Amino acid sequence: MKRLPFILGLGLACSHAEAANEVIKPKGDPNDPGPKPDPNKQGTYDCMLKSMEEKQVTEPQTGKITRWGKPEKETWNGYVYWAIRLEYDLGTVFGKLEAVTRALIRNNHVHIWLYVGSDEWVP
Image (cartoon, rainbow, N blue to C red; front, side, top):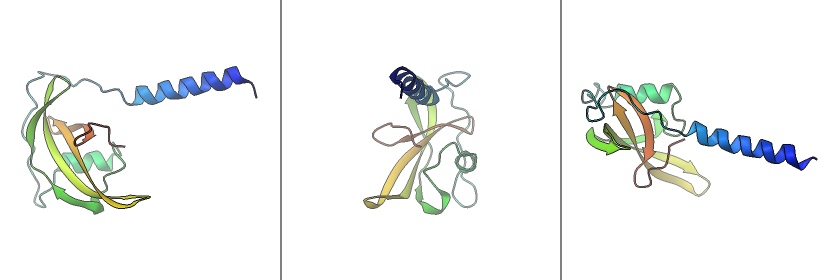
């Protein structure tokens, strides 16, 4: 095996992974997150369900959600968002754990999903 192509391929693979995690800055006034998301009849939020259906994230699954939070304004990365917490059961190699994430929403569209506390991206 030739080392140079392998190393270059590894570097390109890593740079692609970083590019996939780049945040696209939202449009509009940084201080205006748009209208406050309203819960539907079931007490869930349509914009978050749509985001999960469109595979924006793969980890929170609708059948494993244990608690939906209420929208609260939050500033992240210089922009104001509506943040809604979501608690769900997560199966791991160590057993079932409860994960807590939040969806950052602007104009009733989920911009990004982050874990509460660490601000890591939700897969």
